[in-house]
Length: 605
Image 1 (cartoon, rainbow, N blue to C red):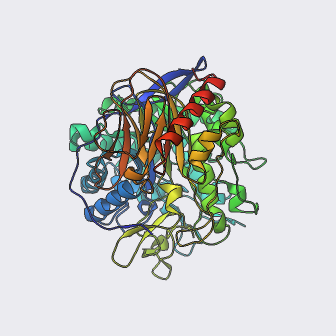
Image 2 (image 1 turned 135 degrees about the vertical axis):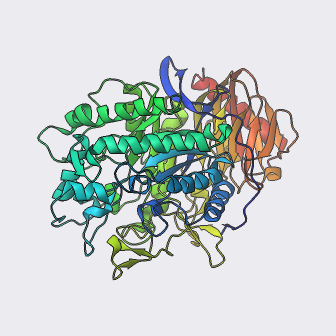
Image 3 (image 1 turned 135 degrees about the horizontal axis):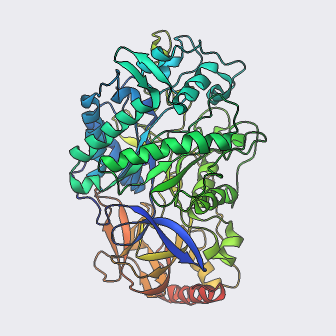
């Protein structure tokens, strides 16, 4: 079990800096992806920080202190090589009263964000809400929410909340009249009578969002502000009441709201950062009757927006007893890729995950393994080897969630001292955090480290053509003795390649070089550099060093223990195999020939 408790000194932000939406051409098809200022194709991987923002115990922020933020940031960088987080903030924290901005709250949020940016981690700022507001719920309710401040709810004079036969908290979005009415008023910008006069509900949100963005722009050093990805204005927007269809609601109410936010971004120094636009929360639920929305009728968004989706396997969270296998989520991740392409922008999966304890928790390791496989490639083993460039762009994502207080909370649910929540995430009986802390405060995994500490192409000098990774993760939790599960198997016509990777972790990256800067892949901690190997179109390396001019190992920015593989290969099409073993040069050379044969057979451009 890996445990991290130390906090390293600060480090300069990563060389690539600002990330925006760009394009590439693969097989004659234009694909929208992320690029850094060097022109490299970027993949963002990390976690949501964190559901603690939904709670009152730490002042509606992810961490109780800057020291805790530093401890969490260090652990995340060291244990997983994550290069991105989705940082949750609360409308109720920013604007506790009409026309009042709590700058002290924003100072605390900025200080916590800086513990990530100073380590070279990108930050997506997320105005998080669930069920609109905690202040809609009475102190004895079975459920709670977060988001809008108390003054909004008091001015709205909503009916007493009640959800008949709600098995899960999410059902409140459709069955709780108080929640639905509040969402309706927000989309319609209802004018509220407040002590400060008439205020439009949506106008108030826009004012505090602009104040938050302006504060971050003015408070973060220039290089660190460059690591801010953009703004996610509203988590999981819900329909509210009304007679129009969900598709029309997105087109007529939610999309115009995003355009209003976009305009505010442009006035406060965020004009170069995309808005991460979420569709209606249920647009991709695999349940008959709940499949709706997804911005299918708005035309195109373009590169100043990002199609920002969530995915949870609701059937396996409830009634489906099976676990996903190889290619289990290829269809779901490809649906997100395809919808983003239709909208003319890049895709981002800002939430996915599964519960760690309780009903269906035993599926979690394989659900996470399958989700990451779907993010890496939209095809199972056979499909990827046969048509690697057709399996979709490597998708950026932040998993739900990374909570260092998991199982150690003390939250008074809806302010009720008789309902103190300590277990799991302390939120509506959820328990999704993939980490917790030991008795000394060290951060540790709750699942097999190989599921979460993964190889991924964080920056590719040019265009990624194909990527796949075999993690060899076990079907069990951190302390489990369950066997490893292998999904990636080399076709029989490439025996030398199959020999080198047999029962080993490995990754394959194919790319077309051309951008400035090197290509970088995160090297998991299970890969000891001296005992790892590379077979590539530009040479073979049995054991990796820090000094080679073409293939070398460096520390990840902001970490003294996490590594990345840095490749300076120049222009042209390249294919590289990275294996978690020190393989004899003769075997690597034979595998190199097989790689070349495979690339030629599949028409690698």
